[in-house]
Length: 408
Image (cartoon, rainbow, N blue to C red; front, side, top):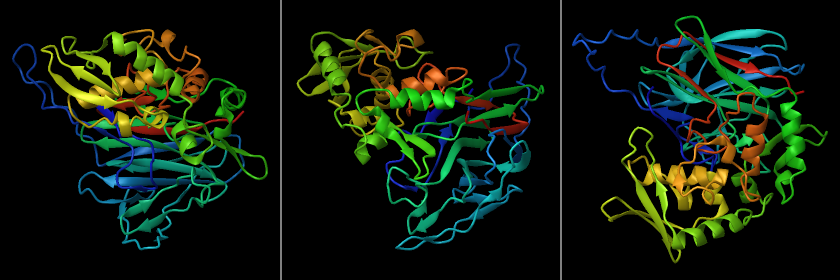
């Protein structure tokens, strides 16, 4: 399977130039073991069917949007129900309304099938109202409901992220920015079977919100409701800090204990599962954690992070798309969010039984994973460390699926 690399941070701003995640295209097929060339894989067509089924139990009308970057040209725009690409027109300052890219979604108990083009993008769905998209001179303004003045603040909506390219389809359910209307994703394989992920346990939707509301330390303030009492979403903790809903120092105690521990001991990071000999060794000196390679040379250094850097896996835990700092950072990010850095000096720790056991942890991520039917989610940007992400992939996808799941 090609490597997957999530875009590193949650939506820090509303203007997005590329959405979702990117999939590295694999190298050309190597010869088979007997010297014969490997059989050619069937080419991924320009579009594949995407079936959207509504099992929500809600009577509101549903609106679907397929927006992103056209991979063949790099242009940004949207796809209509036939999979035809439409480039966004030029925007303005102040932002101008975007063309109506909505597709009428299925009523409760029904399904529709549209065409999914080769995009790196998102499929949004909203209940009851169309979403508001605008265009600036820099690109598309997408919903950013951590901003109380965002026009989509009182709309119930969610989205999936996907990349469809010549190497196949990657589609996930994501909670990196918020937990909201429940849904699952799937892909049909050439043998007729289907891989799916994203379903909650029975009662998991209400279970998540009840658990978050009961968590001390301000975590319940992440929940946003409408004036009629309808629960709309829970913001991811990084957005909660930015909006003042969650204390900025919510992770400080844990971060301080990590810093103290590795001032006198070594944190060993083995970032690549298929390269056990590639190791980096972290030690704290003052306000810096330096990482050395096996020869003792310093390869990268990290300032002491704050909670926002931890939750977002960015800023002081920035993870560039390289072979050293990025892989170390994503390992640290997972360790901080799952609170495994104190109990295991060898990272990544990929044993789920050790996750979220400290009293100071990413409670949002913990509670999401507790309610997922398969235990998998994208509750923070590098939740794929150890393969705990809610992602399905196939190199020869026959069909994609999005299921709008029940709220109760």
